[in-house]
Image (cartoon, rainbow, N blue to C red; front, side):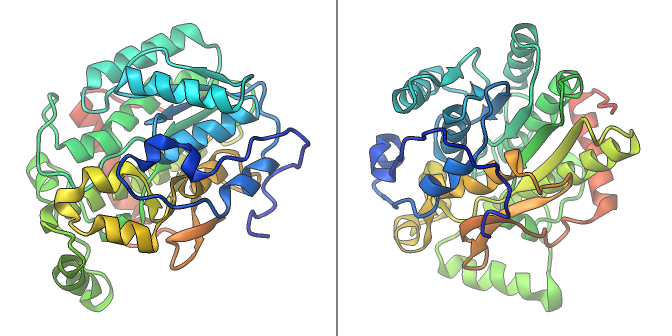
Length: 366
């Protein structure tokens, strides 16, 4: 079964939504139709008592994950840097599902850690439970720019802000009835990452050479031919996505050491090649993205399925990594897959945890 028998069937009706009905996904001019999303989400069980946070939930995979959860009764809080876009996404989901409970409680910009703290504070005061934390927001292949907090914007947006958010919401999740889940949205690009944990080296990380130096051929041969340059932007991206996997692995290790695996689990996932605004924003580093998206990408909705499997899949265990099942894991129904590269490097995972605490000047004790 492509879904891994991960859902209990129910008769709750879900509106069938095609890619063409979401104008926000077509702003960049490339449209890809859904192949799996509409049928897959019908089998999600009732989530009426659950509460979820989706960072970056106003567009792309985050929007479609939020839509699916809200369609099944989950209260979904959108954590976004643009309040107007967050409210537009909220209104759109409610338009599809009039009984949906979608809320925008505060702006959260991953490039500004003060807003992460204020968002978490607002959430902790307003809600008495948190079942699902979807650390989804991300950027790709951006130039080396420092955030106002002094870190590379890719490292901070994709990892550090989510590390902080998880820390600030930790007590809420541990004290929520049932088993809660933290889902970190990574990428297949994590296989190329090879961080060294000090600021200078994180700003200019090495890359993972791979078996027999294959990645060197990829970096210096295939990627430039595909229009993916400058390479430094992609190295930092791959490193930030590796951080998502390593954070997941170390968090799950600490959960198990603390004996609270029945209370909370950490999972990572990879959306495949999904047609989102990520490529458009990265167009200076991906010059032929429109042709690539048109010919190779799955829809943003289909790209949200590994995120959803990680969030509600029955057979998913702590530390798992979910990804598409077809086309070298670029597209297809989601499965529980395997990390690559340095994704299982336990020593590196521990070093990342310590480095993240040092960056934030705050201990994250489990």
